[in-house]
Every structure is written in structure tokens, then in C-alpha cells.
Length: 462
Image (cartoon, rainbow, N blue to C red; front, side, top):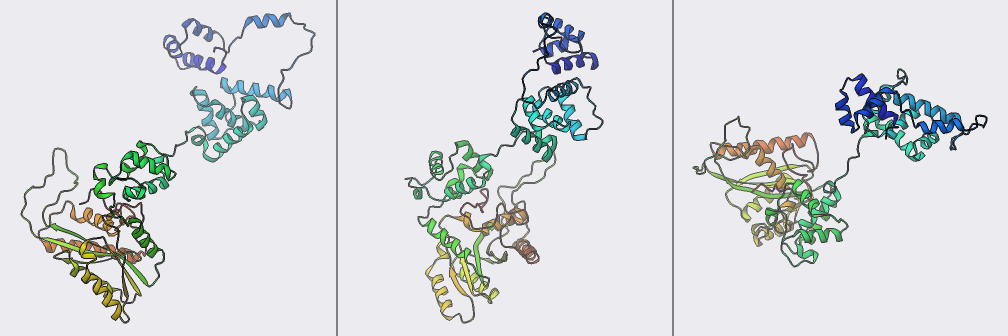
């Protein structure tokens, strides 16, 4: 181990140049102080004396024998040895080197644990050695030499010496999409006699669908999405036996949506009382924000809204109840606002007043007597599938923006704030036309799009 010139030179430099004590250097290098004194007495390892005496006994008139090598000439091998000796002794001329090459030389002389072959490959190429000579003298393949040189040319020292970042399975988009599509389905659709998912069932079904993963990967993906298993029964799983059929119908309508057709995601926000609301606030040290448990209500309201996916526009009004009359009122408002359209698709969840006989009769009568007005068509969502209702994403953003931490003095003040929020949002997308897709103003938690693996509803939202 003491024949290594690089180690020999490094130890001498620590004692003779940097001024470290012999005791500390010997302890750090795990060698005896006797060995250290021998290293300080010679500039380089002296070698075994027995070999020198044996060489003297050989016939001095015998022709010089050159060790076998694969180089084109012995001069290349000699040149390589002289150059490497200068590099490791620190006597090589560095004035003509570029800053990047100079940084590699400093790493080679300071850090003994750096990948020496990578550094020597780049330095040798800089000094004119061929790929074949580098591969032979370092004991690596020419393909490896070319890979090192390409990495240094493409990204410099950081790419050559840096570690490759391993792609985590929990961050793989195809796996996450498959996982949440599975969580949104009842387990019975996968042949399991259960109403909720277990980890062992998820692993088995994911493996059958081409995504073999461990428990930790599944937990990490769900945690990164903001969900916890304690809320999975309410947020993630749909109990509708016709879940896939209804979802395919919605996706089919959206894939064939024409320029003169409009698709609306409709729902109600509330009822909620007008009082001081809890929320996250920036508090000074020693101050604990509080909200009284018992408060006198200043009133309450329900906001009924429809999100048009093509233009990203919201139509809303305020209701005193959730019933069929309010749904008919919303349908009439949309007919008046989009009277130039050919067809209006109304999509909402499976609440009873969303699919009542009175509502179906209104839609049938309108389609028969509509004249030049747009035709109405109902596209219901699966039961317990709030995660597919795109307007839930807008409601979550509105709640975080103007409902959380609020303390409106009256119902009128609350409605004015909601009106202003939707007006500013509509004006933004009128000036910047775009389909409902990306996070809106950074407030919605997910993309407002119909996807089986989407999670529009905030798991913390109630």
C-alpha cells in the first residue's frame, strides 16, 4: 500500500507543506510514525531493494526487454508514465489549461476518494492521448472512455463526478394515474368482495395492471397527493356499480365536444354560516390565533355555480335551498347566457334533486319546444364521485382565498366577496383564453380536468 506515489505525496504534503503534526497525520492515515518518517525521507517510494540487487546480477550486455503492451509503440507507454508521474507529484504545467480542467486537477490532488479514472481520462485526453491508450493504461474499455469524455463535455465536472439521481417510483406519473384510477373505483370492480381498499389488495391489483410496487411506494404516492387512509372511505372511493360506464360516457362526450357545444360542471357550495372562520394565519411569536367555539350566526347562504370547461367561465347565483327548482333555475340561466350554442351538457353529482322527475320533465319539454335555443342533455356523474366534479376544484380555491380566516359582518358582505372572486376569475380567463386545465391562480389544488385519476376535491375540505 506504501508504493502508491499519490498517497506518498499526499502524506508528505500534509506534514511538510500544510504543517500538520506527525502524530495527527499518522493517526489519520492509520500508519505508524516510523513509516511516516520513512515517507518524509524520500520524495517517492524507493521500491524493494531486493529487486535492485537482482537486476544488477543480470547480464549487462543483454538487450533491453520492454514489457508487453497493446500500445502502438513503447514511446507512448513511456510518455504516459512520465505524464502521470508529473500529475500525481503536482509538477505538471497548468497555465495552459482551461478553468474546468484546472478544477479537475485540484480535485485529483486534494481529494483521495474522488473517482481517479474519470479525472485521469479527461486529463489524458486534454494532453493528446488517444482513447485506445487511455483505455489500456487505465484498464477500462474504450466505450467507458468515450462515456466519460461525453459527460464532461456535456455537463462539466458536476456531471462527470456527480451521482445520478434515481427516479422514485412514487413520482412516476403513469403509476400515480393507475393508482388513483384504482382508488376511485369500488374494489368489487376488481373482483374483490370488499367495500374499501386494503394495502394487500392494492398491491395485487396494481401488479396485475403492470405496476409491481411495495407498500411504502403506495403510501408515499398517496401521502404526496395530500390524502390519508382515514379519509379514504369518504374522498377516494365511489360505491356506484356503474362507475366505469358513467365515467366512459363523460369522457366520450368531452372527446367529441364541438365548437358550438358547451359542457358544464354544476354543484352547490354550502350552506355555510356567516361567522368568524378558522384558518392558517401568520402569527407573531407568543400569539395563538383563536376562533370562539360558540358564535352568533350573522346568516347563511348557498352558492350554486356552473363551470363551463371550454371557456373556463363560472355562472353563479345564491339559493335558499338545494332542490330541483334551483337546478331548473340554473338550466334557464345557462340557456339565456349561451343561447347561441347548439347543445348544453349539464353534469352534476348523483344528488336526488339533480335527477328528479320534475327536472327530467323540464329538460324533455324544453328540447321539444326549444326552437332556436340550445338543446339540453344531462351527463350525470357516478355516485360519491366528488373527485370528478371539476367545479369542486374552483370551490376549494375560493374557500381558501375568501372563506378561510374570514369574519364578514353580514351575508351581503360575504356575497359581495364571492361575486368579486368569480368576476375577477372570469375576467382573467376572458383576457387569457384557456380551457379549464391548470391550477387556477395557484389556489386550486389540482388540474380542473376530467380524469379517472384526478383529485379535484381537497381532502381537508368539508
